Amino acid sequence: MRFARWSRGSLVVGLFAAVAIPGAVHASAVTFLDHFVITRSPLPGSASDPGFIGVYEGQGIYYVDAFSNGLEPPSAGSFAFQIAPPSYFMQFGAFGPSDESGGKLRMDSSKGGLSANAAGQARRTQQTTLTSNTDIGNPVAGLKQSFHTFSVYGLFDLTLPPNPVDAYGIQIQDNGPGLNATEELGIQLRRNPDLSFSIRSIQQDFVGDAISILDEDLLVIPAGADQIEFRLQRATLGSDLVTAAYRFWDDGSPMTAFTVMDGATDFFNNRGWARAGFRAVEAVVPEPGTLALLFGALGVLAFTTRRRSI
Image (cartoon, rainbow, N blue to C red; front, side, top):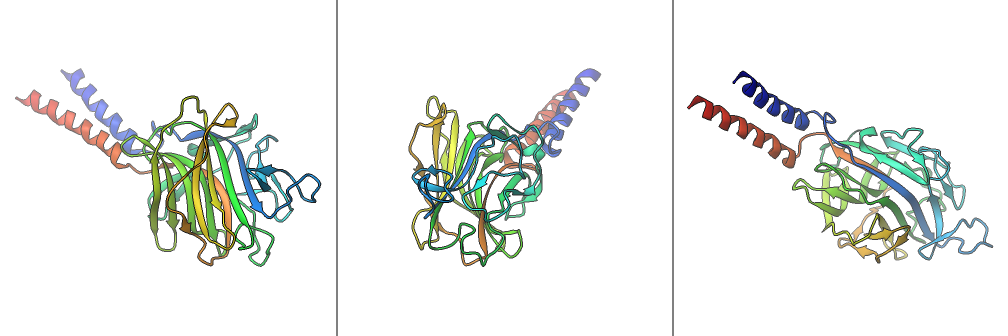
């Protein structure tokens, strides 16, 4: 009887620790980033043009990181023009010396730093932002000028986040003054509190403390898919409308067309400049799905205690 009481108590204590103590038995959001590419138009479009470094999806490459040199962020890839230092700004967390190898970057939210979303909810985030513009008066740098279009791509290994709210994806930030984002638009693969998986287009307003879910698709993985590519795109000159899209890859090649999500948004709102980056994120506090696990355990304890007292 004493052992039975001890084992029931230990079960509930263990479940409570798993819910209440971040990282105690909390698996992290882990995936691998295969490439991070930004295209812009107009840019050099052929190998004979000065500044040419390649073409992706029919547009000249403005920036590319194939994670092939073994130097993890903040070391970065190549710009078509040397408009900024080739580095990332590590907004939250860090990467280790073995995280970039074999042409991929290992993303791991457990290496993240404490952060908060626009609604003030605590998160642990491993997040980079490319230092593509540090001068709002430079008409060549950055993504925001009205005389060009742009697309941001992130190709990830198709792994499933283990816990509610765990996610990974790409984002663009409207910055200024300083390095802090005032507004952010992202697309991510996320595990929901009901344990389903979805792809979300999300906008965060860090001035108005508001989060808007622009669109959300339940994750349906085509047979054979092993990677997912996200895209954020301004496709029309003179427009601030940015769309989110995704497609699946198999064995190093796209296997589906891009699915364009609803909720194209007038994003920039006359702020300083725009930067792109990528992240892996996990919740720091219990969400409804994990709280349900705790309450269920407490219910089992109450029931067994009642039976013992009858």
